[in-house]
Length: 338
Image 1 (cartoon, rainbow, N blue to C red):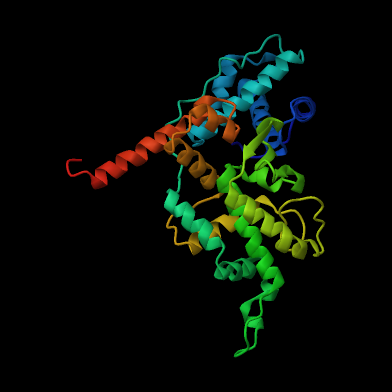
Image 2: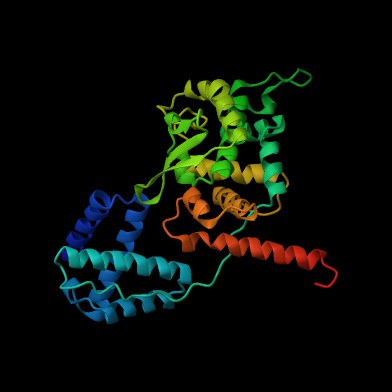
């Protein structure tokens, strides 16, 4: 994307109105609003500096010129697809708000994206990851990262190691986080936004708000419910006593405030290495893995779509490709005539 430019006063007013529309009328997330504003600002600058027109003169040729310029900077097909989506939303709003006579963005298409299969864990790897998180050694590695004041070096040589309450609390939290990510296929943003009332223990479900502020209710497996219960009973009270404001957040950081998405990524990455998983994984890997294992277990795509909160079934269909690819690799390795 182009370097930061000074925005034209008229463009600035348009951008502020567009942001208000995204936030107040569309209910888009802060991340989406920032991304769409950035794309719209870059498009408006291109119109003035390259096309020599203002927003009222925008047409499909100008949009394609802008997208082509983005491609020439080395933007990937997936980035161009996001840029095109933002531009279409922007152009639809321009027309609806009377700033342009009609929606010129509806015909804008990005280059075809190649099929990229997501990284997934095998069921055995997922099991190792979750079992390892319950190991006492995991507690020590968790504490060393988040609470260095309670490291092993503080115990005098020759003294028996007394369990540290914070260390134990972090280990219980990590185990519950990993179990819930995999059990319910949650996005990391959904997990960190959870309050305690979001878990229905009687029905074995969790209520989350996903993309577009859409709410869905997802099943929670028995191991995840047990891990959450143990965390709430024995771990959460310890961290809630810290200086942070915990409120009703389900998961807390070491200082007692709501757990952040960066901390969750660290938990997953560190836990994977501790479990001997030789691939770099993220919280989304657990979501991909849960969906793939559901498909491999015979779940229909519509059910998996509802489970993940996808607005389009086409997005969910990637997991049939993942399962087919895994089967192909298994056959190549095991079949004598492969």
